[in-house]
Image 1: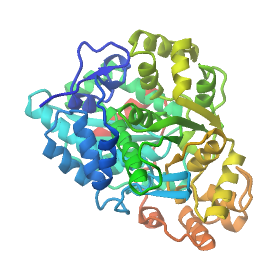
Image 2: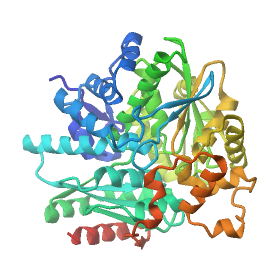
Image 3: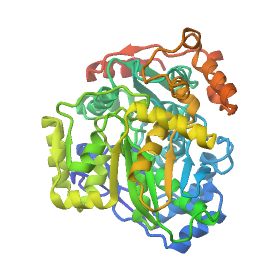
Image 4: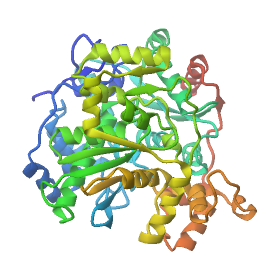
Length: 515
């Protein structure tokens, strides 16, 4: 079996590792992120042929092209489990066309109604298969703790994907008060004997920084291995096993658009993505590199516009930038972890440059890329920032003109696409079902300003009750069962912790002591 091996973005790994090791490690030694040593290439005909396959078959074919070190029949079986009846649409991620040139890729038909399911129904299965393969080879003899920082959606999707998996436990941290009522209840009610959830005092960046610090604490990691035979790993988008499933849906979507006659075979499209941690839009860039006819990547930021500013200036600066809580909380991020992978690729895979930029970001809270890298960035990306009022206006406009409800993240992308698009058809990544953010959807539809007080009778409703009201008033009555039944589900997790790494490590120890 041929193997595509994985290198790290900071050039500190002694030798490349196979896919199985990259997935179970999550983060490379020295803090770098894994990327494949070689990218496959699909011809246009090979991409178009995908339209005749099921989604699971498309995913398996793309994975096999990356020459991962698992048997082909295992890859096919794992994809069949990942993309089946756990999704509420047989197309897995169907495409709704608002007009002839504006297409919405619905990535939220999985068990938690967010785009993270597209990767997190896949990653846990491949993680377990990879760990088992490494155990059979004698490469490892330990279990794993998946430690996740979430701005809202990754946490629930990771919990759902890893619950009751053998040899794995999972702990999730989210910003206390920084997620929607629905997102909170989805995590706090999570079933499973191997799961735990913590609210963290602070914002998402505090959660993410704490997780990175724990991963980087050699003494703590050594103690976990020595006393518990447990290694830390990640289900955040820093894990290549999270990113590759996202590459799949962009390649697949092009095949579907062409196969259904919505675009001409070979016609280029632009892709617009609501962007926070940069993984979703990076996946579209990789899809372009392996042969998908994608032209421009449109990066949609909310009022936390660090990525839009970076793409437009070449300077990444959070030194004096205020963290803004917006109606699109999964994008409320100032430190975008996956940008490191993108810069590594655009800078000619120069690990020294990446180490310098990441050190500047850590120490100075800013860095500036060189002119050549900036020129390459601008050749592939354009970007805009959408404020909360414009986000709400987009939700109402699309409902009134197309009888279609966008969640606030997708609304940011829709609005950005209107200003950034050229002549190409645009594929907009829709990242969540509207009912995950019903309170702000209600505000948008009823001309209540962002953050404005709801009428007393509306404010008294639970998130589920408010969603029922919106569904009745709009006539769009489909609410996924996983969202509709939350009020009847017992709250299991109420812990609130500080974001200091020592506090997180203590919480992890207490969780591990429970079993």
